[in-house]
Image 1 (cartoon, rainbow, N blue to C red):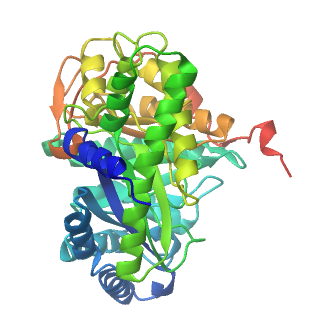
Image 2: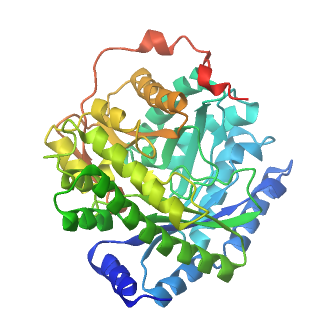
Length: 452
């Protein structure tokens, strides 16, 4: 039975508390596009994407009108391009990236993900060629996003790939230096990457997925923050219960949209990703949730414990609301995209070391962090290695999206605009990890990976 109070509560969440569907993402397999001929391959990629996703934007718009629920982004993810581009030259992979970009523009979507590779145990020649042109691909396209998985708990960490990621980030920053090195905002390095993540920049269509699938990413930091505020003083058990109930309601909204989109486009429903993904807008901050719990400012001692409680309660509430919860699901802490995080870094309350500690208990990792443009490749690789090791050791997804903004130094602020927001340049440890990074090879999998 439909409850009037539930309807009114949902309307209030949308109008007053910034509840939205952050993304409807269609995953599309490109495995049947493989061709020895570069032009033929690219044409098949373009035709497959524009055919399968032709109604994606229209569907999102119709659902918005029908239910009054804002849908912020319409996106596409595809099979990792390295898996289908074995015959391509490096220039051919750039051609493929531009083809993805052209398809995105034709569809009117916001981003397209999947220009990436899975190299957690080693790289094929195809992987190496794609990785070598990621900076060019991201600098010469507008909507293409790239991700590389360099580690899993089962395989350990491919440190050769980690070292290469430092060089990739640095060159991408240089090639987009006239735009505050924004190319790095479209590139992410993973451990234990999920194959059904609808959020950019890390979305791709896994090889175990169907030919096409639609997934939804829900976001509601403002809703959770308001619920905690109304709760007032209480113990942690009561606090966790309230977050669970709120996450349940948010997830049900996401599942409704996912079912509708699936039915309208005639493709299977994949997952609902319940991730508290913040924006720079006032009232839409994960940091403010932590502060509403009782911290003077995000980054104070106790922040990691508060985030652990939040992340766990969100997951529990989401799982009760839907049997198809997947992706990342939890709390994101992207610095430039969260008004509270931006403020905390600016006040000196939140360091990169504290952010790294927080990633051990949150959804993803070090995200949208701006660092000194002079930061060396080895330091970037070492930051990636530290974060990736947290994922491997804890059997969870972790990731790094780091932006060494050319010409910017601690004390400066970099503005990307829109949902990407702005951020102070965060100070890094100045001691060198170069000898460690240069060892190469693979850090073995942890003992607890032997579960068979």
